[in-house]
Length: 121
Image: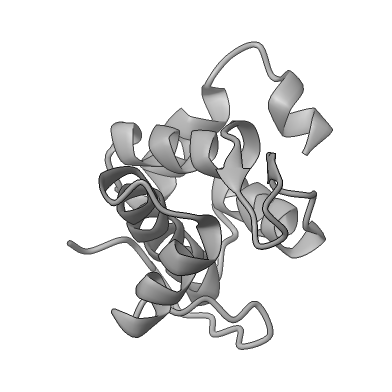
């Protein structure tokens, strides 16, 4: 997370957008949600997310173009979650549960690979 937070440019956002064909503004919003924004956490604390190696690895795969289907699921899950959290001014776990209830589940242990994967609205 430190490496991602320390980047002086948004080259990663541009790369992920190009690799997945997801609009840059969405990737930027997801990046801010995951790595920079503070959230109301389950313990009542307001803080940024703790580093998660699976998220960081997914971000690197998305950036390099070697992503798997579950990495796209991460983007979909996090985009829904950040929008829900903002619209309803709610805590992280409520937004997370809403994302899963909507069918946007991210399970980093269920990797699927396919040729020419891309985001489709």
